Structures are given as structure tokens and as C-alpha cells.
Image (cartoon, rainbow, N blue to C red; front, side):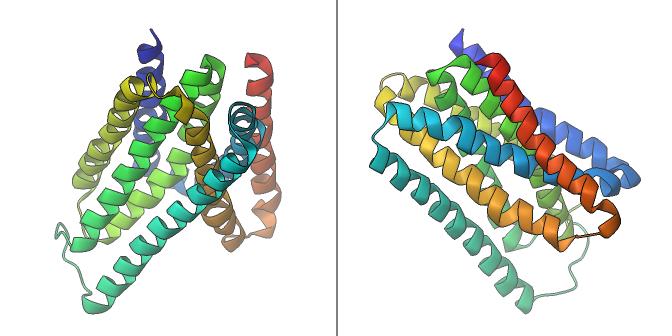
Amino acid sequence: MLLLWILSFTFLGSFVSLFLVVWLLSIKNVANRFALSLTSFAAGALLAVAFLDLMPEAFEKGQLKSVLWIILIGIVVFFLLERSLLWFHHHHGEEKTGVMRGEERPVTLLLMVGDSLHNFLDGVVIAGSFFVSIPLGIVTSLAVFFHEIPHEIGVFGALLHEGLTYKKVVLYNVLSGITALLGAFLSFFFLSSLTSLVPYILSFAAGNFIYISASDLIPEIHRAFDKEKALVQTTFFLLGIFVIWLTIYILG
């Protein structure tokens, strides 16, 4: 029964968000109008889950110093992953320009590896959360769902920029999404015998969520600052926090 919960909500976090992104990008006006609002909402949601749910659970079940170290390690790991992607992308971009439509470049593989690793860890995090409690698993899955939308929009844009066709981008994102189910499935069997690792997986997830929100999403909101839309974006940011808090309150 627990495995069904884990796989169902991992599917929600990875594939339902992907299908929503495909739909949004197929309607250009909708994508342009709501992309930044979704980014603002996701930024607030990720911070709320990290500080109001994942970290308190990790502190309760693990040693304080160890939990803080793992949170820091989670931030550093995703910083290094993103730096490697950016380094390779810019380095390769200096060597070759004018990509033909449908032509695949080495950076495409790196983008897919990075996205697959990201999705795999999402599956591990969701499984680890459900091992603590079903409410925590649901809230964590919602956070993954909310941040996957702007994340997938970014991946779509990067892959299209690299010269891939729209159909190939969709196919590659579906394949990378399968790694989330793989991460959840493997975690179900390994974590059941290593439950002592769960608080540290939650800590790592908190570091991941904090990094994504503070390093990627919030700067993106500030970069696209528009006086006319600033209030709307701020409202969506606060709404993301409120929705997660309300969900925790209702389920808790």
C-alpha cells in the first residue's frame, strides 16, 4: 500500500507537471503570461516545505549537527551540479554556434543527465518523506510538482535552444521523468531496511529545495522585474508559502 502511495505521488510530481508544461508551451500566450507567476509560486512553496516540514521532521528524527551538515551538503551538491552544467554549456557554446534544427550536441546529453539525476533524487525524496508519514509525503510531492513546472519549462527551453525538435524534447523529458519513478521504487526497498537514513534524506531534500528557490527561482523573479506585474508575482510567492502551510495544517 505504501509503495502505491509513493509511486502515485511520484507520478504526480514528475509526469503530471510535465504534461502541464507541454500544454502550456503549446499555447504560447498562456506560457508567457503564467510562467513567471508559476515560478514565484514554486519559489514560495519550496521554501515553505523546506522550513516548515522537511527540516522540523529531520531535526526531530536525527541529530541536530548532522542534519545541519546534510542540509549544507545538499546545497553544495546542487551548486556544483549546476556549475558543471553551466560550465559545459558555455564552453561548448564558444566552440560552436549556428546549430541546425534537430542536430544534437554534447551539451544535450549533459542536460539530460543532469535532469535525470534531478528527477531521480526527487523520487528518492518523495519515498523518504512517505516513510516518515503519508501527510509529509503528500506535502513533499506537492512541492516537487510545483517546482517541476518552472524547472521543466527551463529544460524545454534549453533543449530547444540546442537545436532539438519539439517532439524530441518531449520524448527526452518523458525518459528523464521515468528516473523519478526508478528512484522512488528503489528507495522503497532500500529505505525500508535503512530507516535511519530517512532524516538525512529529508535534510538533503531541504538543502535542495532551499538552493533551487534561493539560487534559481527567486533571482529569475528579480531579473524579470516589471512594476506592473510585481504585485502579482509577490502575491504568488506568498501564496506558495500559504498553500503549503495550509496543506501541512490540514494534513497534520
